[in-house]
Length: 69
Image (spheres, rainbow, N blue to C red):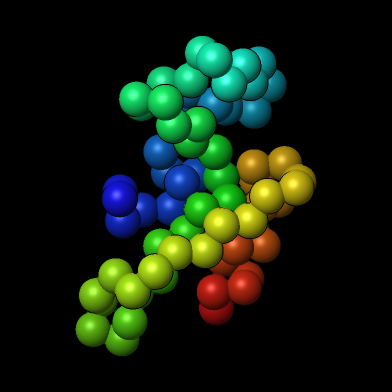
């Protein structure tokens, strides 16, 4: 959808700030937090995505990057 890691889209959700409740999310109902990563082929064509959750957004994003490497 955005063709960018979800952590790049989470500006309102910075360290030390309260996480919004699911009924108060932004961007048309999407909760944008680290852990989502688009996957591109060798030619730069989007071929899928990877999502990780269970830790902090920073941990999820780091694990997604490691898994995609």
